[in-house]
Amino acid sequence: MDFEQVDVADLPDDFTGVTDTVLLDVREDYEWEEARVRGALHIPLDDVPARIDEVDLNADLLVVCRTSGRSFRLLQYLEMRGIAGTCVRGGMVAWQAAGKPVDTGPEPSL
Image (cartoon, rainbow, N blue to C red):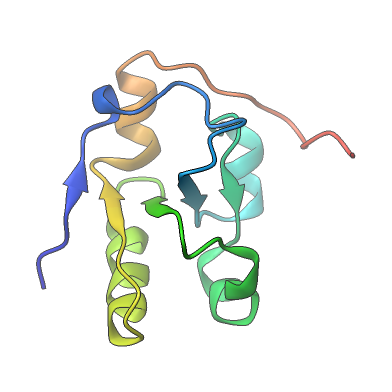
């Protein structure tokens, strides 16, 4: 299956306050703490089916992982359920290679 992809250069550096697009990061907790996009929603891949109600499905959905493999797996799962999404081409490896900003460490408690 071919899925729509978007280059990191075409994305904002920060998704905080962005209401029409969700950047869903499906990497594991340790990867999230190593580097993450500010304002992204973090749900590890294996947890997405049980937590799909946390995702605003009325917004454009972008999916990011380390290099795109898990993103494609999730997009395939979502497509079978009638949910469209776009893969961030190259994932966080491409994000960091492009010099885009990241947050690190545990996410601050609200």
